Image (tube, rainbow, N blue to C red; front, top):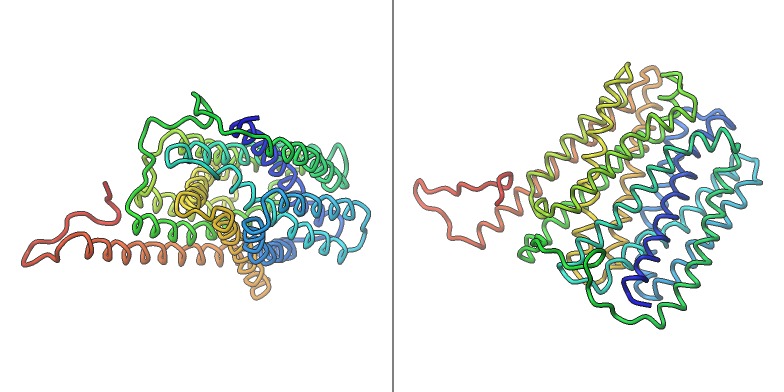
Length: 418
């Protein structure tokens, strides 16, 4: 078996993982609402707890995979998640469901950094963007499918399906992983062919090491804020569905639009590498993220929410793609970098819901307090991003060109990069 065919197997593992994790975690909020009467405050706390665990465990998971091997890390992850979800199907207490979520999160932390590294290892600067592009399309597409169909599955198959369906999928992953492990020991390098894995005929965007490192840090800073917005929205969608009289099935249909918009953004960013290391695209996406977040949660009507979801999906698509691409493009320790990328996501998953929950607890009389508090956090993140880029740009200018004298000032700015 060639390396190209092996990587097709890794993408299959990734797609199954994305569907299983999205169905369980995103619909856990509906489950907690129906079984235990959870509202926005409680669901935000649940999401924050998930992010707090993930923030630290993902970093460890990436280091574990780098040190002990990718296949071993995946066996630990898939096995832990399947066992936790099997327990979740029979546990009836509130504390038990929190424990299931915590153990499942620990297991998940061994999977995503490892899968990111597996599809990136051994790639050249020309083939890496294609690999990252297919990786993003795979998880984004299957996550969108999971959210779109999840509400209907929840209604037709019952509450326990959020545990049993993903648990079965994780067992299937273990079986596929065992086969891939045997095949990998016999694998031979493959010649690049047209299609998956072939060298791109366009520049990859690789730039000077210092500037590349600067964009890596920018992406690692911005991506948590994207997940601040994402996980705040996802945690309160059951409440949003109640406000607009949507059943779980119709909430899944209606609120999955931004998932498909993110998928569309990944398609464009995969095919067009002109956005690589261009700050104007990055900051525009962040502004769009902030505005669309506020509209989704504050609009009293559904049509503005539909349009805002499209903008939101496009924005989070570019921010996420930047973080993963720069993590894999800069440096050789891909498992460790994947862990940092995922740990940054965990920080966002924790930070947004935690701030939203704190605001609702402090100002219970104001239903939108959580939304405004998180929007303020996103605004602070945007200011920090611009400040970091401005400082790094000034350092690049000082190193690359002599200081101006008299009335000679540089005409380029960090917002207008060629």
